[in-house]
Image (cartoon, rainbow, N blue to C red; front, side, top):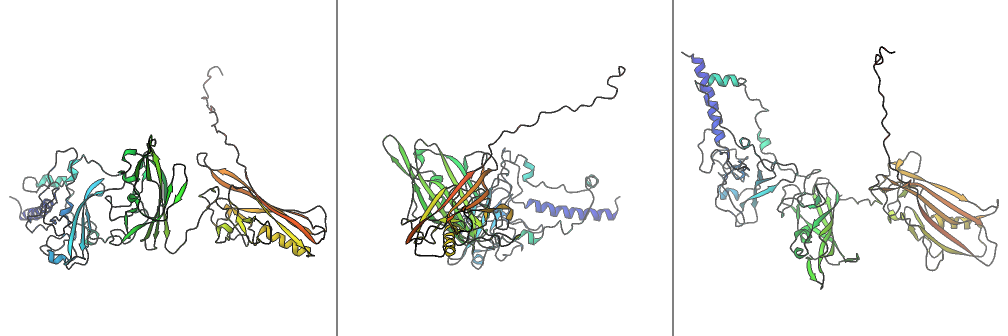
Length: 593
């Protein structure tokens, strides 16, 4: 005969396991129950919530899931039947758009949906997502429900789940007089739940993020994938259109795309509207939309000539027959996004620059370029002359160091940091005074003018005037080694060496007439992608004697810039041959030695 204490303990255990079994039965199944539509464009489903163990099962509540024999089982989580904000049984919770206890009249007085998106397991590559929103412009306002297929942008996702028991809950075994001793042996004993084991309401009803963070995909309102598409190569050089554009992640990629000239008008990736029609959400899950404005459209002909269009109308690819060949015009070749964001992590503006071209039937693999840049609102982007190495044709970056140990001071005009005298048609130095041209990387330049002297001018004043014409108002004493060198990194700047070549006669007046700038640069980094780096800058100032006095004299002033490549030839490196460093045992030659 059992003791009364043991019977009381059995009753407590039976009550706890019955409650757990009732909650397991209330787990949503894979089937979606259909209901009436509250909006003309929305499909409404009657969601069923997880009820307490004491309440009876409502007709909309699905039964326990059953394991499917399909090799690719469908997830058992019915997102249309989940509702984490339904906290009050048989009552409508305020702003809970998925509460089945709420009626159409209740939805009309809601201000917003506390839970707007309900998803299942986020690790699957494809899953269902229930979208709840309110149409406040309608009269009366009503709820809008959509059930969409959500694609996981991550390349590390679960495509097929072959472990079927993981997709459902198993009913626990209820203790009784026959199996109680066996369950006691398999379990570790009875423990009370701690606060950390019980999920809090704040965790289940967490608010939506109010700002973008670094690396978060940019959400869109009118695309099937739900984020801004940024094509890029993944495992091969072919373009993949499932790559999302991430916040503050600047990218510049090139990829190839297989094209069929006969299908160029129907291919979405070749159309201009495919990239300009997206609407970005200002913040994640926000109702404020930021359209993408077309900033510029440039046409490229078959002979590589560029023509910028005045208007910003949408051009469609057009197939043209030219006798023996077929051409497709207005094909997208380059896409450049420029997004302006605020300190609060909001997308403020979005602009787009496109390069359209023409391809022939001989092209089966089209090369496309995509770029995306982020600019903070209220700031101006700092143009660079390279990243990191200099780019041919961009101005040299130069500045001053006021005192030893301080940073470099630069002018805001990047084309006025290192300049030379500009030649004019009149060849008159005084008429072209103040006209300067920047020193562009890789361009050897020679310029000059004539200075006509009348009357008697003091030599010192004349020498200072000619030196100002050659050097300009302020000649820098430091040049950046790389195109993206920062002003605070003084070690990335090269000092300018000044050399003066006076005439051979001492004690006479010297007039500077020529200025020569020699820039030595080298190829830095990998052989596959070498970067141009400046290693030395020398400025030579040549002077002559003052010409003999006369009614009119002419002095020729000239400047020259020369770039010298001092790169050492690349040599193949080989590892040293291995050496044998073997030690024989001390008794190896025993008994001979």
